[in-house]
Structures are given as C-alpha cells and as structure tokens.
Length: 226
Ligand SMILES: O=C[C@H](O)[C@H](O)[C@H](O)COP(=O)(O)O
Image (cartoon, rainbow, N blue to C red; front, top):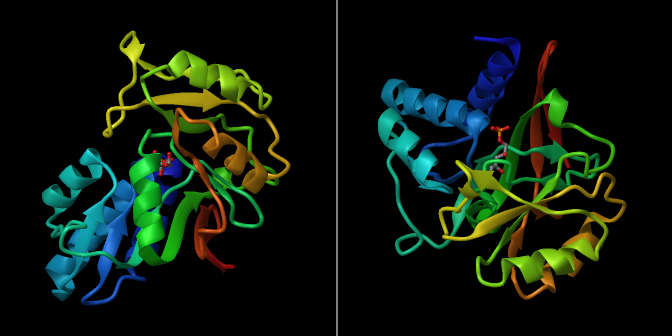
C-alpha cells in the first residue's frame, strides 16, 4: 500500500470511531470512503455496534454489502446522525469542492440530511483557495451544450466529462461538466450563480456544510473542528 493509500486508510479508521451504536450514517463516495466503510464493517463484526447507512453512490452501496454494513433508505429514514465523506479540496473555512467521482448530487443530499458532516482527506486536499481542482457540476443531458455555454460566462472553460469515448453518465442519469475556475474568490457567490442556470442540477461546491475535517499527513491524523 503506498503512502497516500495509508493516509486514506488512517483517516477512514479515525472517522469510523466517531460513529456510535444506533446511529444512522450517511456514507459518502470515493477511495477514502472505501476505508471508512471497511472500518465500519470491522467495528460491526468486532464490537457488535448496530448502525444503518445510506450510501451516496451505487459503488458505496456495493462496498457496504461487501463489508457487512446494513443499509437503509430515505423512505425509512429522513434524518441522519452523521455523514462522513471525502472531498477534492477543502479551504480554511471548510468550504469544499466535491464530485471527482461524479457522486456530488447524492452526496449533497446525505450531507444536508445529517446533523453533522465529517470530511476525511489526506493533506494534499487542503488548499488556501478552492478552484485549482476543476469544479464538477452535474448538468442535465438535455441542452447540455447550452448549459455549458452559460457556465462559461462565469469565467471558465468547462469540459464535459467523458468515459470510454462517451459522456460520463452519473448514477442519476446526468452529465458532469468539469469547470476549471483556477481560483474561486467567493465560493458561495459562484454557487448561487451556477444554481441559477436552469440546466444545472447540482454543483460540487459544499458551502457551510462541513463541521469537522479529519486530515491525514505523515505525522498522523489531525481532527479539526469548525
Ligand atoms: O464524487 C466523488 C466524491 O465527491 C469524493 O468524495 C471525492 O471525489 C474524493 O474522493 P477520493 O477520496 O477518492 O479522493
């Protein structure tokens, strides 16, 4: 396992220790969340804690099954105790860019549903300004060219995310526009402007949502609260 993978495993394990018996847990997506789900499965086996998760992607749901984490859904449960998720960038105010794995829409739903949002990252994701990572924006396939044209007016050259020569299709049947803004001075303002475009389904900007960030670095694991 390389160093970055070890950091992801360490933060995933640390985050799993925040989950208490009886909790309803939002399970994010991505390679760091893999280790969270793995660690939750271990705690269920070893300590017998009883929890239920709602996954933010088909992939995370499959990992939950693999590691023995019971799942529920929003028909049964409207509120979650905690959501734990990765991120692509985290700024000093805990504003986030998410969606590198195209799961941002469902991730935002489970983040909003939770009393507490805990973010797990390795230190490479901590930035002074958001935007070096191209912002993922989920857009409707209908008139996607027009939506991208409108996004462009906000100051970037969006690229439609492709997979195997075709537009990537999200778990929700939509497309992703990756938007390289370079330096986002006012993330909340940009989010409002993007949300005002009709073809935008959801943005990868998570504004004032994260309560705690767990960061893995060569020294170990640091927990930062807002
Ligand atoms: O859509 C994907 C998510 O927002 C991920 O949480 C994010 O891309 C971070 O993923 P990873 O832990 O693999 O870097």
